[in-house]
Image 1 (cartoon, rainbow, N blue to C red):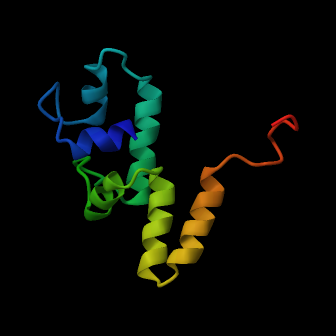
Image 2: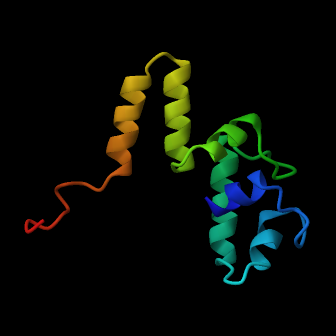
Length: 106
C-alpha cells in the first residue's frame, strides 16, 4: 500500500523517482526487500509500469480503493464482467480473518 500511495501522491521529488528511494527517505523506512517485493507484485498486477514504476490506469483506480491491490483488481474485474455482487462477496471473504482460526471465547 505504501508504494502505491507514494506513487499516487507523486512523491517523486523527495529522493528520486523509484519507490526504493522514496521509502529510504521516510522517518521509519521499510525493509528494502519488502519494497522490492511490493514493486514486483504491483508490476505483476499491472498497477505499475515495468520501466518507469509509474502508475498505470489500473494502478490509478486501485489507489483510490481502500483495499489491498489484489482485492481491488478482483472487484474491478468483477465490475467489468458484470458480476459485482459475486466479486464483492469473494473480496469480503478473502479480506476477513477465517472464523475457524478465531478463539472460541469471542
